[in-house]
Image 1 (cartoon, rainbow, N blue to C red):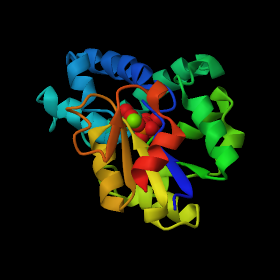
Image 2 (cartoon, rainbow, N blue to C red):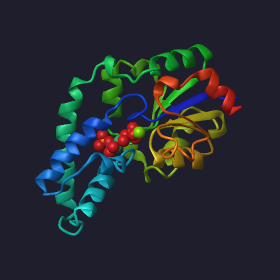
Image 3 (cartoon, helix red, strand yellow):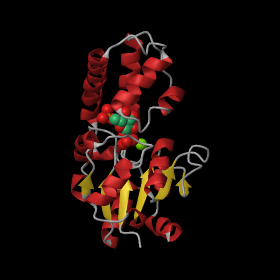
Length: 218
Ligand code: B16
Ligand code: MG
């Protein structure tokens, strides 16, 4: 039986991707690299430093900065991102998520957060959802980012559950791969094409219904 749900944050609980995009776009522009939304898709679910590395590669600037300079660039992006997320309120919870959380609580199913974002706890706090989340994986403690299954395996461990007792919910292709490799039932939010490897997918968070997910997962 399913006893835990493991959620990605950005793109599933709230749309912080837009703020990541603005902050990366501005940083890249300062380096003479122009980013668009299509490219931004590749940054979803990817850690801060991996995102910077992809942007530098995209601009053919991979060898132009040493580790310390890259740290400074990543820090600069994060400073702007942190400023932007100060505006987050409970109104920014994506449609259907509050209802899903309430249904999970009522069913006695525990909730974990598996976000690559080091700003995850701050955003949950701003959304007013901190009290409803049972455990949060600290991305700073992970050796490998998504699509490696580590973050989802850690979430199951923190919930004291076997991966097979958990459902993972993601909007990124790398995230679905991570859930599948962890041995959880994967639920995707996105297009059919992007979510082709998900065990079950919906096109918007509004369609995430506990009864339907449990029916599919069993
Ligand atoms: P930070 P998720 C991810 O969140 C974002 O999708 C990704 O764009 C971001 O680079 C990453 O978190 C790291 O975030 O710079 O705040 O530590 O989708 O895993 O919830
Ligand atoms: Mg995401």
